[in-house]
Image 1 (tube, one colour):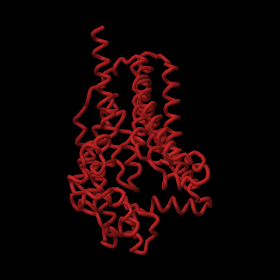
Image 2 (cartoon, rainbow, N blue to C red):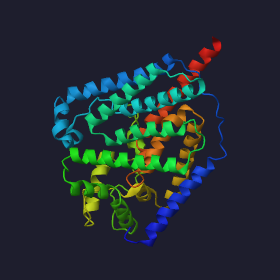
Image 3 (tube, helix red, strand yellow):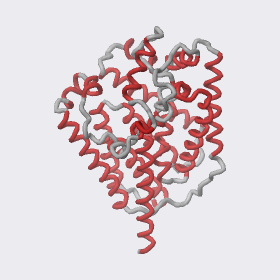
Length: 370
């Protein structure tokens, strides 16, 4: 941060207000009731539906880009840059990961309650997750792959039968997450042509530590984003609301710029300051500040409240927490990067949680009636 006191204070205040928001969720103590008694079929139906939807999406992408499979092996940068996603159901992949998380959580809870191994369902979840990973690799979509895999670790750890976990256990899990993230980033950097150790290290620093140097420059007025104040950073999901954007143009209604256009202007904004224009992240807090100024603090308190509620929900083994908390946790881990939590994926996960909760309710009613 260039040893900038203003940046240190800003960062500390952002973390503190977020934590205050999390504490506001503390009085909300949902009872940890037994999870819904879902049969294997009741778990498999949503899982199969998500797999089919993702298969349709991948089929469309391969039809639009017949070169994708071979090009991924030689130049994954082109896959990320040039592929045609028209009609490709881009939200099918995060939806599949969300349903896998939910199914994984339900199987873990049922196994703890009954001891039933449920090998068929567990194998199905593994195959569905492998299909999701394959799809993410085909799309060179690291920001689908990393949270997707992290979600399984979070759910397994949170729903572990051990109610008290040692500091050493948590530290090992944290180190594993950091190493897994570093390996994934390095893999994608390698696939994009950054083959040297120095190049990969430079990419890692450019995407992580250097973000806070750019944050310092932003706070001191050296960096200015042309679309700052438009809401595109703090409310990114409004610019492209999944499943509804073809019915209602929320972006136009709120006067927001196109999100790709806004993203492209960031490269020139960073380069104009004399910094390396290949790396543009100014940290999540920086993006919020660019849009909201001092309103960043109450905004982060509200975000903390939502994350705190999702944490309470996953402890209570509810669909809302099983789907939303892994995305929230991933976003916190990547605070050094962008504002991932408020990306359009948020809408996808919220809708997935609502549908799965409704499905559980219907199945529970059916069980009671029987």
